[in-house]
Length: 394
Image (cartoon, rainbow, N blue to C red; front, side):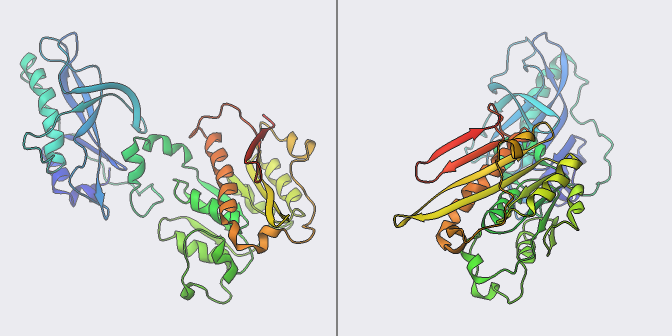
């Protein structure tokens, strides 16, 4: 629990000081040890869970009047289910806490709850009133021992409120890997970084020796001002500085991965390979295979045909469980680039770069259980002129 956040939030501080079993986990507030009555007219203890609303990293007035509840179906002293039960469900809004019901009751004035003290104690009192009708000695104020703050675990500089509002903060924790690498920060690599930077990966290592030039500004996420274009600035240094505004742990390596330094990737848990040319891919992939590290290699082939662009986007996955398709099915070319790929000199294909990155990042999230993966394909393609999506090597 962030004691600093509680200390600067009068409503949360009041809950703690009055002896409630208060926990703040990421963007949720939990009130534990709340007495309630179950269907057998027994007194039990459950947990109330609410999202926290923030403004500039400080708690503000609740937008939502509902809360979740972890426990059996709460009843009155006669064993009749309480009217505040909005719905029964099973969800994990906070890692390690499974909730079973949603409660709903609004203040009579119609203005909503003024703060979290009012909101949480309203629900706590409704439950506790029925429990005290059976056992007058039970209380919600249990005065638990409060441990000192540990170091902050989140890589973000401010809270991820979107996950908490959607009730998937526990699900997002599946992506909280120690370190991943993006090798190549061209058009597709930069969009992979943009997507990954919003996930709870602790460290994102960037490898590229190229300078950030004017034409790169038209193929990367966001909008650069002319003052952002500095002579001699490396791509990885630009992206490190940009995403450090959002999070910690973006590490710039202003050199390419080659035969000499490939072992640096052995420290990673996952690698995205975004290289235009294939001559270094084979030794890099052999290093990753030897270390048991999963990776995704992306590629785009775009050419001019009859006055318009056509082509194919590709995302090829390799895991310790399946690697034979990469070479056996010739999914990846290890040859040097032979002449210009039209997309590399055409500024109007950032949408293709973003889509290629999305194919890779969606598969990465599937591998680690964030998305369902029924097909378990290890090779995905998108054909531009037909909009056909292919999936192979399951």
